[in-house]
Image 1 (cartoon, rainbow, N blue to C red):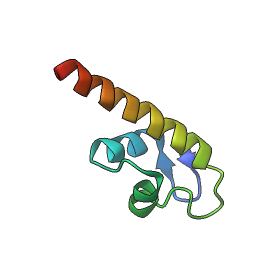
Image 2: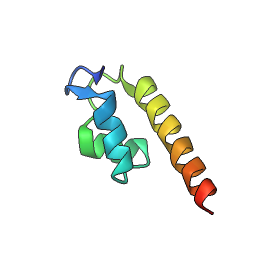
Image 3: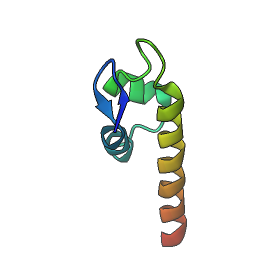
Image 4: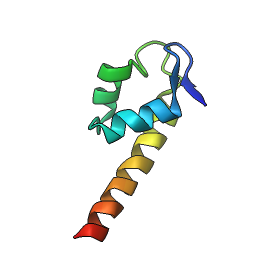
Length: 64
């Protein structure tokens, strides 16, 4: 689904960018420009970011 209409960014693109190492809103904004225009996508982007970071942390905890 499209999260950022202004820049045509989807939830899967945000997730892929997080998997590639962008772990803050600032990094996501720099990479994808989410939240840099109207700001309506910020809340959804933060939700995706937090969910992905939890998944990454859980996966790392399972390995350790």
